[in-house]
Image (cartoon, rainbow, N blue to C red; front, side, top):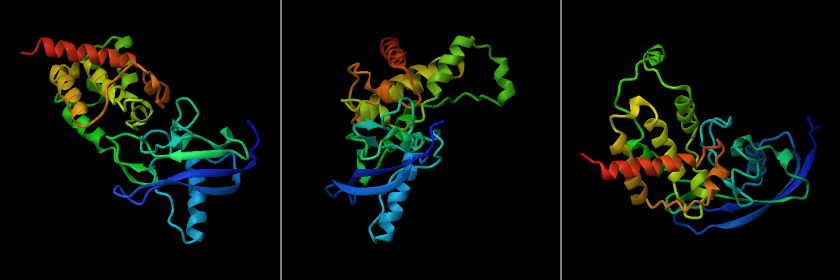
Length: 254
């Protein structure tokens, strides 16, 4: 492993007091940042520096800091979650940057993700999408009960791949249309592949797509930016399955 070293950075961070106030990029200088730090730890150091100077620290989303919860998220030099493939912001480390670098840090940009403060955006529209159909009403029982339903291994693996989505919103931030199709397709695909998801199959596809449009998310135009930005590597093949599920539900409604 490469030995840790200290680097000096110039940060241009989006500062915005609240949802109704205009924002702008503000420049900060950091010295002697260890390359062993994660990106969020680097922001922690900056916030300590700001607090010592009686300035308001930068607001940003975070929780587990283990790449699992999907809470973290910001656009680093134009890329959601930063330059590393399949890496959440909290798992991005400063060894991927060089001394003297200038790093621009902005919130996710989407009409459906309004900025609340600094780097914090309101992603509650994802919750509304889940409420529209991202669930099953079947009693699934405990883990041993799963063995009672035989599911081909390939199908189970495809469902698990879709279920890996952590709902961070990077797909929306990366898409030029601010589409939530990758997120919705992951939820629809996961449940459509499994027998437990069959009862709401048609209703799920119709309601989640309708809710997505209602909330102001854009449409998919096959740019594939969502797939490239997804920290869990969710494939756009799931969008193809969502389209099939939607058209079948629309054509063969009871």
